Length: 434
Ligand code: ATP
Ligand code: MG
Image (tube, rainbow, N blue to C red):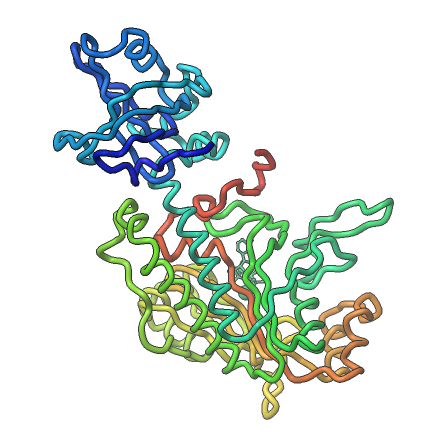
């Protein structure tokens, strides 16, 4: 549409064409107001019954809420209008009429269930506070990409249809690939490792991961967005530094460029970019601290995975982002390297928000013999992974990296209760459409 002006840019004295959705029509008798909404905001259109063309006024009064209209006219200063200006229309064109019955109310006056909202995302995102979440999500992705580029990492895209899983078989979605069994990939893990051994050295990927999670929880999706990083010649501590840098960059980007959205969400006051170094606790310290909170019925012992309530108790205790390092080797995946001086200790780490895990990472096993032995120990057939392991025979540098859950980052940053609020079209046990 040529010569279209965003409502936010309409200045008194301008002659404009604005286009958008009918937010509301307020009929006060002799005078009526049509509120038009677009990506940039809202503007008042004045309809004066005795002063203006009858047909024009009627068009404005009769149009159903949420219809798409374009309005041409002069912009006038009007202190009583919500934005201090109004348009005196010369022409109103109804471009797409909306049904008078809507499945949900975009003005937000009537609350809708999450499932109704997800079934009608188009209408749902006409609400400022829902739109704000996705504007912020986009800013987070932009900021992390910038941060990765600042670290001289190259963006890659790896296959999502694969012959074998990486994180064990139970969470795999099988598909049929020309008559052959294949799977939706759970993680770009193996591919990004193959690329640190290539000429690229340091890589990142922002892409979908698929996990056949058994249960619906507020923090698991069956299709999630993973923000992955992997670098040659990094150990786990350098990978943690990069992780902290990238997460802070996401917060900084939002603080800098999303003030309006934060205000819409009521977060402008409390929003804080994490400062200082994220504390680094060993797994041993973590279980001691969890046990000391007294929140768990049973005390944790070495080798236990951290239960959700344990993570929550520790998160409250620490009160900021933190790392858990030096996990028992047996509860970290085979591709993670153990400490050279203690094989029972893994270089694997998790980065936690007080509410939940955001990141898992570690230094990787780059020695061919150790890697193959690790596959066997985990009950996996190394032959199936030959495409991967064989590259470790041709000069694979030491390397480290991590994977960050994109939706969990959005969710924890904005204090959302349910991870589904951070995805346009979530996939869960019940939801395959839209
Ligand atoms: P959790 O224990 O919380 O289920 P995980 O340890 O199985 O997570 P990883 O394999 O370590 O997950 O994946 C790295 C990151 O990807 C996680 O820290 C999390 O942020 C994100 N992630 C993993 N699975 C999911 C999922 N099903 N839905 C949303 N995000 C996920
Ligand atoms: Mg993990």
